[in-house]
Length: 411
Length: 94
Image (cartoon, rainbow over all chains, first blue to last red; front, side):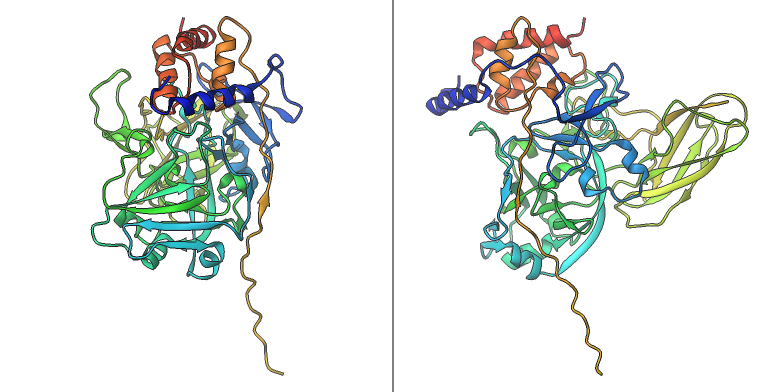
């Protein structure tokens, strides 16, 4: 047991033991579980409950109850390019998530290396600053981690730890300018209302470089898809960092601190780091790798109307459709191959709803003869970056974006 | 009759009060299950742990140490070995 604050640790531990209480029943499905899904994760376990037990949420794939990890059922992505709020994925680090928020009492602090410390009410944010809207994909750094081979520890998501929404809010730049950023500021650090159960655990905080924070696109959102944020998606305010992984999109944002020294907090310096290599990829067991904070997203594309293992008619056209996103810029093209990448056919892209959002694609595909086909889908973004044909690997299971392959049987 | 412009309805927030579900799921009974249930469920439910793939004893040791060193889990040193053995038995590389 730690010497430092030992008494506090002991008191905390006794309180924690009291919380656990009497021995529970053997493993059983809770009454509120709505059925099961089997995620096709190599080696498993892929069985997950579908839950409707979370407030303001419809059916979600349960990865963990507390703190909540809820994955979007993949069929939701076939319904359109905007992910409904009540099925938007959820990911929290710490279990003490406030469940009661009074909009008249909430305040957002802006402090640190600024001319003037601010304490903004929600009224100040909603009505005292210019409103902006932007659609952007929010994707967990570890989305698709369950497909890594060899397997790694962490949240064992399939591909549903992502979503696209139209975010309404205020520019972070305007909030920072209201406080006045002093010369010498290097970063801005963000903190929310959630807290760890253990008092001396590191509070979840993330930082952005000052120029990025003030780029005019990073925003503080108070609405998604036209409605206030569900509690578990960060009500009342969350940071939106278009084109960057969701770890930066701090939920229940209530504290903004302008820093004159680079942030050394655990969640910036140690957690959420990637190898500084192409595709953030190394060999399993490789050591001595330089690590940097995870940052921009990379292109991805998915088939949404047909599942792997489906049967179609040979020598007849079949519609395939899905979604794609460019990562930190728009989608230039989505291409399909039915011959394992020897030849590619461009698909038709749907309406452009914004460069940081999902883009729908569609094509008519004909599999010439009966047999099994591995259909490949490849997105190339507007910066010319294409999805790679081999999967990356890193110990944390971050940044997967290999071309998706779907097995289709022509009969 | 002059046309009267209708003001756009300003967006308003409503206070929220909700309940997050609890989990009563325990780690399955076995050698060391008391240690893991008593030490670990205070901070997080069992689901994410039980969804892990098969991992080596070294990997499970690293996970438990991460809980203690990075996340300040107040696990008694004498329980660490027991917890690692339990996880390696339940979900260990053979």
